[in-house]
Image (cartoon, rainbow, N blue to C red; front, side, top):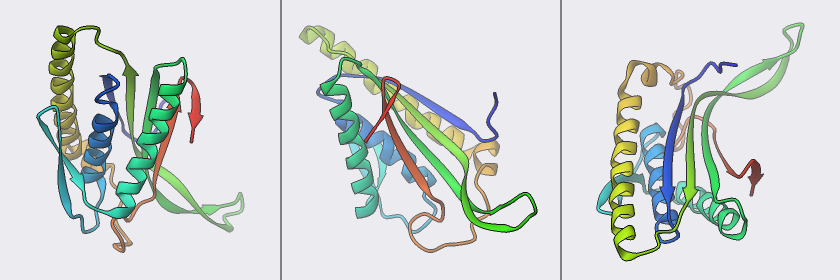
Length: 184
């Protein structure tokens, strides 16, 4: 079954020391590239990779809450795989069968899926190799974001902005799954 909007997938293998920082940086980078209001930029250094971010209390709270939810689900459970899914939608009039206005509904126009797996390096040598691989993955992730958001498909996915109030004219939903269960 094909959905009618782009889905961008980011695969990451993380360890206990880097999980929160990496997810924080990746979520902020996605928001940085997809918020269309007045954004105060910030940056995050994760394993010597500079990631763009958004300096906004509401977005910072959203990111922190979702990263914490993910961490608690992964840390406390037996399943060491999970997802954080960021869905951008637009409000459209909802109509009944007879074209009667029934309020508004959120219609997705783009989704970002962060697949994360927790692994633990067993030695210092393994940790160095692990961190180098993760830093490379983060660089590729930023490249994926830039490539997608600047591509014709990435630009054309964005609906017409009709409400310029606030940091985002579009509803944002962030869902956390650990194993196959939605948490938080």
